Image: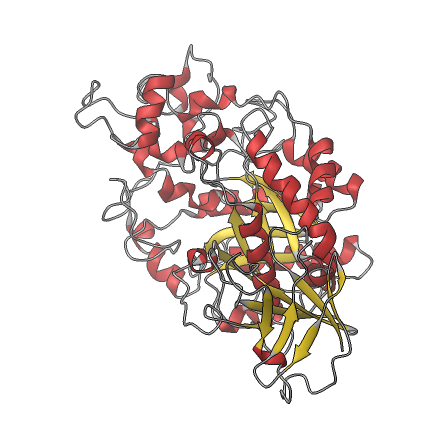
Length: 544
């Protein structure tokens, strides 16, 4: 992008709020919501989402081809990185075979969305999220505004369309995650050149133009539509591979052009119009291009108005954003990545996590780094006790299948959910979310989350609560160790507790039945049966 006086004014105008983005050929759906935060604050998160509690995410696209983990399309241009070395071994030097050339190898040859959705539902998922595009800027649908898409290149299939149809068949609400707004800065390493390797001085893909494609497989396509690098570099270390900023358009990150922002808005409105998603997820601070323009407000208003129109006046739309200030947590649904607040949150929220890496990683498989079913179940109960939902990503290989270790984890989780799901689905938080050493600790969220390690190894003293109008549920996040007394003590339910003043006439262990108990000044002491079959976490049902 040529720098001129008008360009230099972009940051000042954006900060002042004088740069509304315009959709091209995609009118905003009309309705009661206007693209202002004031109007969006009238939104209420729908009850279906509050009842659902658990969703599964297929965070799946062409970056799974090399099986070397997340951010592959960026890291193959960073000399010395794991992905760079793997790419040279598998394909050759990125100056000659870049990420654009990997796209045709994303074939999805064994992908069966109908079978996958039936299985996800059997595991206990109450909603499904599909990846629409990642930071690699490749659209996983028959995109009108991005020629680098799954219909033109790779599987030659409308991936989102098939995911949406499969979700509808099994009756699961359907969501789409869109991450391509950060291709602008995320892809800056593609504009480097080899700095000491075998191709020293040779430029990478971010420099290419449509004219460079003559005689190549991608002739007629413009690499700038994919890499989005026709702009000044950001200040600091983005292009050198070290990222020290969160997803915010300040502190030296090059301001995205109006054309780039309009293109992202068009693509998002295209998804809303064609696939009728119940949810939109954005991997950003608050919303796309927050503090630059009103793209985020326009998307939220469009989703909410479209949902009302599609559902006869009932609101089903949910739009998720990260690092939300409290003032906007009513307008949007707060998403916490790989972590959770250590408190009960008044408004519905969601945590997103993965049993492995965000994109399929062969090392995670070979080194047994997956989360266990027990870890997922414990995290789920902890999140639900705090008024949240858990969105779990299960990485798929490029062919559209998961491996046998992932399958075994999901089967074990399915068994636990069949027994204990009544304490999760359609519940609401109790007076307190829990008790125990972790519950009583100060555990801060790091940026957009990243504190789930604090919850991975609880003791049997760690209790979490949920409730329905009829029952109080209490889960110990772990069974007592074999060398300890086989009892669970719940301090919050002690004799005379202000939290539960009623008499307790019966305690049931889900999946087993009635269990002996006694109420003392120290707590409700529950004797555990020796013949229990559960290996993850005991859940107790107490009539209110």
